[in-house]
Length: 251
Image (cartoon, rainbow, N blue to C red; front, side, top):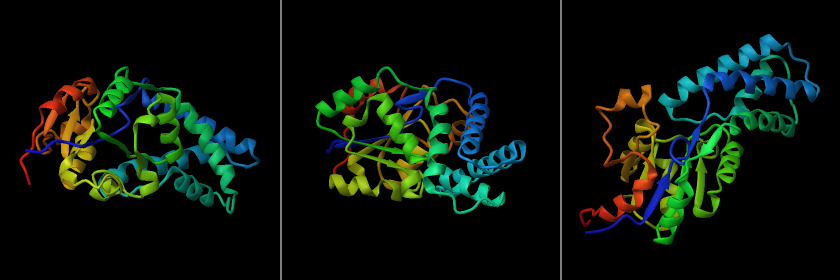
């Protein structure tokens, strides 16, 4: 028999959670983005700009979960501004505006109470730990990781914004397998999303552990009969006990 030697975590709704209604916060964040761009000297008609930006972001949200390709928010904002004949802006200007916008969202992300104690325990037991997050802005993820105080526990933090591909594409996990010099079947994937985390685990040959506390949503309900995790926990406080019970067939 063989054991799990490494664990890859999802971030949102696994280690941290969003403590607000997303639709309420979207309007606030869009307003901050617009104000930041105008403050840096851009002449944009507010209603037209925000309408186009939100339309393109909504189209991106619909596309990314079927194509599994990541187009960053930086890219989308650049394309929107080109449509308004605003070209060749300094990269720093757009990055600053996005930083202002993402700060709005970051104010509502809260660490799960058990995240740090569980990660400490798993690290103490000798597991390799990694984080793979589907996200359209790498800086946002890095800020959330630091805000939650969980960076010291991870060997690598990988975002789809940098990788250019999204879970469940198995290629997004390859960097971790190579760094750990482990086979995928020696690694567990822990996350809340059946169509990304658990299907990603299956596609890559990992052991898939579904975290259900914040998983009651339309996407998961649509996949509940077709994507089956290897194990289910309500929250990650159950992981240390579960991992001690997992024995896998020898290869």
